[in-house]
Length: 421
Image (cartoon, rainbow, N blue to C red; front, side, top):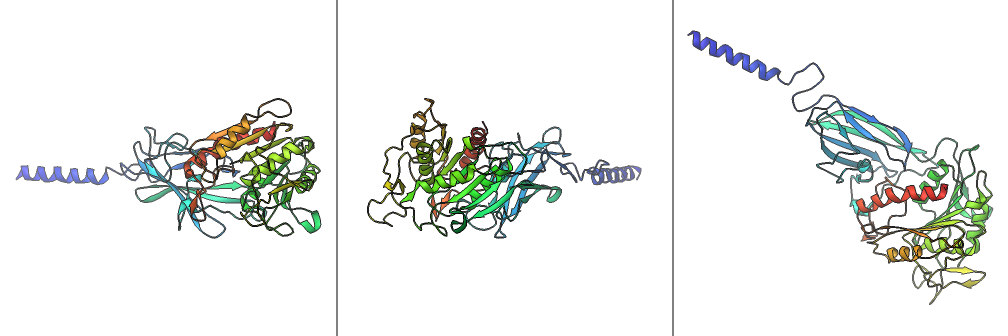
């Protein structure tokens, strides 16, 4: 009888130990899952093109957690990123070094949860995150969350900023200013820096992404103008017979803005805009110092849409004469042409064009430059960390979301360095 009682007592003690094994006084829910964690961020509020360092601590060694990002675009569409990590021996997950076991991106990447976000509906490859215009909303927010054991154990809001306090905006119209574009000026009182003229491609108009880019450049001290040269009010409907004098007018206007270093104006052109950027640097060295050309063409191409304006019509003119150049000369460029291209560009051979540009010399005798990304596609003409697809109109412009994103992470600082030299 005593043996039975002893066995019963032993079983009762064992049950109590099992029931209390996961209960500790340090905030741990059990031996596998934490109740709380700490999210440390070096820059809770930062420019939208800046990387942030995220470090999660207070976890259990070997604990599996899911880290998510979430935001909403201007169309009220939710976008989310996700990655599953295992905490290290100190109970830490550092997003700069930890490799996710699964999620929306692969490999260690401090900003992977930002650029890899996918929409709640639709094909990520055919989608692009669109925040509100920078002149309407100077920033947007991303929520970081840590999930363990099916519970959210930590949350934090991050602010991603387009326009720093003091940045000014003005819409230019052809009727009033002889130009159509969106002008962003830096806060007053800063040093004079290179003004930047931004040109989109065959989509025409003043693209949203160019406005974001202009706002970020102004926040860094550069007067910046996102210029429309066709397909907008007061300008031709098609890309045909566009006079370089229009761009020269824009350059002169921009050089005259407060805090503009008139000698250092740069033109950034994407796709078809790369042609205009090269032409401006070549034919107007008194106005333009440098050019940055994304997914460039080495030659001038005909009118767009193809066949819109008569057989053989040129896209560009100078002094009333059509420009049909194979290749575009670059020997009079006062500064540097920096070409950025992907090897999987499915629109045209921008990689070989960039390589050709880098073999040319400017007026000083120095070679121009190229940044080449073999796995990237045509859609690399931007700043990093926004989620972009690789498609257009149901087709693909080449590359992958990851390859394009990493090309922008690498190229954007070098663009900023050229502008700020």
